[in-house]
Image 1 (cartoon, rainbow, N blue to C red):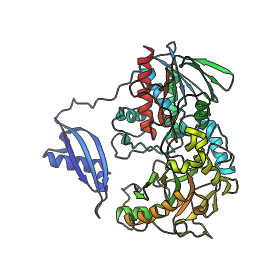
Image 2: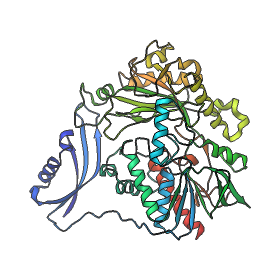
Image 3: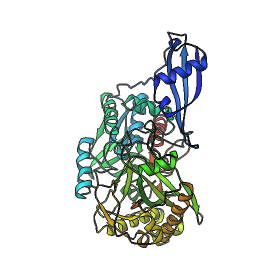
Image 4: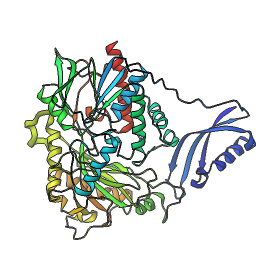
Length: 518
């Protein structure tokens, strides 16, 4: 017999398989020995009251020795001689598009401007230790895209866009822990993602697909508004009947190329702000109502949002037990991001705190047309670089000092490896952003008492929350509104926001490619 139970457990009980089975057996009024199998369906934390509770939805099999939970099936075909489809970008959207193409019998050829993971690590080390920026190999560009050296947050609100469970199961198949399939806020960890990405690459190449590194898209080959192929590294032509464009939100040169060729693009909403870092112990104490976090509880996170003068101010990419990293893709700009290892055991917690950008912010950039938002983003990133004395030592300020408009004579310890430059951020960040951030931090302190403290620090600038440009496409065919056979995909096209939604979009585009060439 099979049944489902909804359990409310203590953290210690939820961490103990025997306790889970014992409690389940007691509810069902059977012996533990009668339970033949079980599977956790969903797991979440309820910290609204003083005693934290773990909600566990579990499927129990009892009195049935022959029942086996069905495992996901994948039809990874040998597609070495199949029709070739070009995918631009080896991030989550591109990789999952490739896996989907293989299952439907098409051969993916992935064109990636950056390097393979092993070589990419060296460039990231140089960025962290020596402030040396390689524009083609960094935290954003290279095998796996920004997803490889992010912390692998898999939470998404895009529940209706595609088969999210399929994405999670594929990640598990390639090495992720099973818990990503049932936790409310699944997370892989920056220390585990590279191996998973390497395993995905192996699946693609073992089936006959190709991934070409150090290969930068420099032009499109278009005739009568139909894509015929691309140009790589300014000299090599590669022809294809369809192109999936999955270049990520940091590939600004792609937006500029599209504009130069009069291919339709659009401005889209985005946000800019700072990244705030607290001690993880403080966030734990606020969120779990405790002085010391229970060893069976994960590092606490938070999700904050408020309205200030008609604009949203909100937390973004909160990283419990994590660290802050330099995420620039240009030598004259400074961008920061956050991530966490799988066990989230850093003593720091960080999060982007950002403000919605409106058209009125872009007044001085109107001459750039649909790229006005991109140029404003680049302007802010360049300001941050200049205020870091033209280095990657991020401009920083104690949190209360920022709110009160004071210079920080000293700065607290930070997880940001390249170093800090004490800066009066409110003086160079546009007032439309800085003043709303000040009020936002005050409002957040009302929701999380103790959040506004001078032991916390802010670093600038957090500017890559999403793409400031959308590449418009048909809702039905997912093809570009103007160019037939071109499939804008993922975050860079403005249709996703994270690993899972990008992967789902990649799968959807691959299926539409199949319809198109058929």
